[in-house]
Length: 80
Image (cartoon, rainbow, N blue to C red; front, side, top):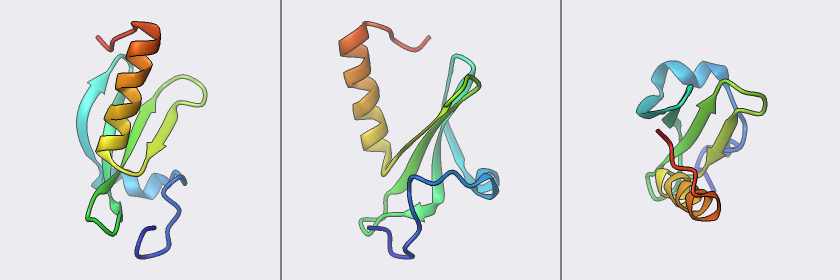
């Protein structure tokens, strides 16, 4: 649970100026959002891409990387 009660699954455009880009992927970017911080101090992670439904959200960078790892194992489709 996030200390300020914010919903980590909500996309808020006003959070983008403070987000930290940690990688670019195809036609998108992986971001860490310092506006949503877990009780353990981890920033929420977003994967923002240009195609429909192109915003994925995770509680932390670890969750994002773990999801990408499992997606790669399932599909063999690694980001370029």
